[in-house]
Image 1 (cartoon, rainbow, N blue to C red):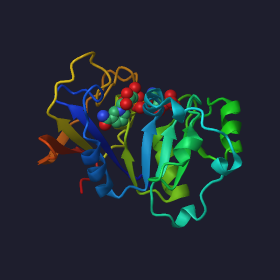
Image 2: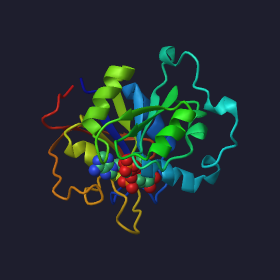
Image 3: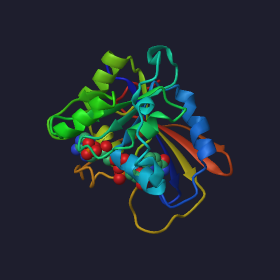
Length: 231
Ligand SMILES: NC(=O)c1ccc[n+]([C@@H]2O[C@H](COP(=O)([O-])OP(=O)(O)OC[C@H]3O[C@@H](n4cnc5c(N)ncnc54)[C@H](OP(=O)(O)O)[C@@H]3O)[C@@H](O)[C@H]2O)c1
C-alpha cells in the first residue's frame, strides 16, 4: 500500500520558494495538522539548510550521537526521511538531534556509493534501497509503509522532488502558503521544477479543495490531485 502524500510549500506570489520571508510559525503550525508519520526531504533541501547553517555539516562526533533513540516504535513523532541516492548528506547526526522527529532514515538506490551505505550503517541510520539509478519513489514509499508503518507522508521539499513525485502519480494533495511578497530574482527554485527533474512534459490537473487567509495575509490554498483518492 502507498502512504498518503502531501506536498506542503511556502511560496511568494511570484511562485518562488526561496528569497522571501516565509512565515515558518504558520508553515509548521499548519504542517502538523496532517499528523504525518514521516516527513520527506530532498537532498538539495538539506544541503541548502547546511549552506545556511554550516554548523550542521560537521557535528562533533561522539558515540552518543550515533545511537538511535530508544523506543522509537512507540514514539508518536514522525520519521525524518531524506532522499539521497548520491550520498551527499553527511549531517545525519545533527539532524537526529532535532526534537521534532523520532528518528532518521535514508532513501538510496543501487547506484548509491557503497562507501556511503557503509557510512550510514556505521551510524546506525536506517536505509531503504529502491531503484537502480535514482530512487524509485513508488517502491520506496511502499517500503516506508510496509517496513515502518508509514501511512501519511508530508513532503517538505523543493521543486525537483515535488516534480518526481507528481510525475509518478504519488501525490494526493498540494498545500501552498502564498505569501504577500514578490521575491524577484531568478526563477528557480519553484514549487515544481520539472526541467531539473528531467520531466519537462509534466502536467498535473488539480482540484481546488479550499482557500483560507492565515497569518499576516497569507493565502493557504489546498489542491487535490485529480485521479488520486480524494478525502
Ligand atoms: N519554501 C518551501 O516551502 C521550501 C520547502 C523545501 C525546500 N525549499 C527550498 O528548495 C530548494 C531545493 O529544491 P530543489 O528542487 O533544488 O531540490 P530538492 O527537491 O530538495 O532535492 C532534489 C531531490 O530530488 C531527487 N531526484 C532528482 N531527480 C530524481 C529522479 N529522477 N528520481 C528520483 N529522485 C530524483 C534527488 O535525489 P538524489 O539526491 O538521490 O539525487 C533529491 O533528493 C532549497 O533552496 C530549499 O531551501 C523550499
